[in-house]
Length: 139
Image (cartoon, rainbow, N blue to C red; front, side, top):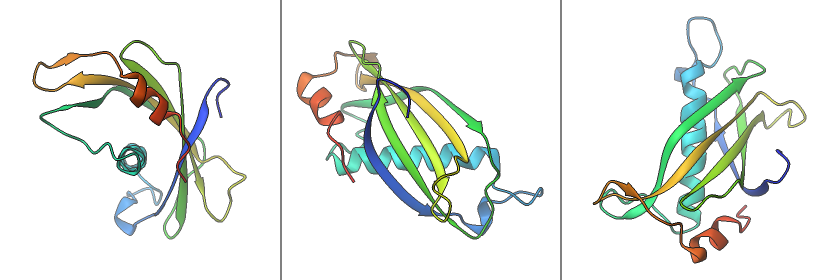
């Protein structure tokens, strides 16, 4: 976990056969889907579902470093941590590991998330109450 970040969520999911590509491993684009689903599960667990007509989180950048190939079959765990708060934004960090080998990091990534008023299509201040909820671990 990156220094200054707090662990907030763990999510497990299966590697699907369709996640593989012609090279016989999980396609690089699928890792972003895994990270996206982990974020959505975290937001849902905080009772903060996506709301296309309201105020809430929007990803403005995402990155992933692929360290070890993942292959079907298997189950992965995605650990989410949070840090680097701004007026209207925060950063997430993610670690992806196979459940049968939690000591080996398969990929690490993250995103910058901005709190947005969808009606105005503008960032807005992250409410203090939401900032506190974001920092509460959910397992």
